[in-house]
Image (cartoon, rainbow, N blue to C red):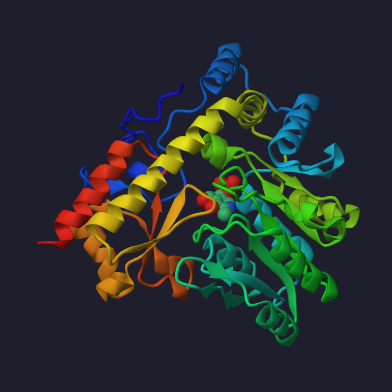
Length: 387
Ligand SMILES: Cc1ncc(COP(=O)(O)O)c(C=O)c1O
């Protein structure tokens, strides 16, 4: 049994989550950026200690065992067959998305995102001088859907070259079904749209749902897509900047590598390699326990809101440790809601509007934390709103 209940103070550790931002209020509860407040699998700490003891941290190479560990995890946990030669390591998935934008499109090309969505997608498009085409997902009371006719129409009208796709979809918690993936992929094949499928949250799926990697929906999709993964969300290793991108199509892989070469950043982080390998080799039980703990947090939040704040609607996530909550019945603007959370409830969340204009009036909560933190946060909201 691993311990997810102990509250670990992360203040004054140069943590972006706990020390970052303009507000240094020591009493503020931080439930924003996707970074867990759990200690990692003890085996990871052990192997990192052993490396530190060596006292030399020169340039490293990716060992054969890294590819095996990644491949075995994908097969074991997701029935996802990957080959060593498809794997390209990058310093994070956001890094990979930016590289893909540069590798597979030209300046001023149109790239689609399905909003609300993880905001660095749009940044990757705009910062690289491409044009973002946002298509809103349809909100159906308790879940989101894609209008496939509109999706195809917009691809044609806007001459879309690339789709940056998120599965499971951050922030709305949607796990795309095989049927949906087939429709998306079919349309993209037809119109020569490259798909960058960000599957960093793939290990977080609850209930009946199953994560289906984009490549596994239909083998033909390998020709037009890349799949971005990492152990960093699942095992809380984001600061070690190591991710594995699967690029089965040789031409797409070469273009990607060429772009990576041009950045001058292609040697892996030695600690990131070791941690990732160990996570994938030894982390099954830890992940299973962590997932059921996080699911317990989701259940707790759902029943708390039903009982104490019934007008606030939680969109029950099918995946992710992030929870998307609809506060629109409070009739506040996004900025007013933000002010309320920061000043009254002393709670730092991710504001819905940063994920796209459809997110106005929503908040994203990070539930990868000890239950005591969640309880405190929800109680603060309840007390503050009744003042
Ligand atoms: C969908 C998604 N992609 C990528 C990332 C960040 O990945 P990395 O730290 O590997 O750049 C996050 C982090 O929250 C995320 O939610």
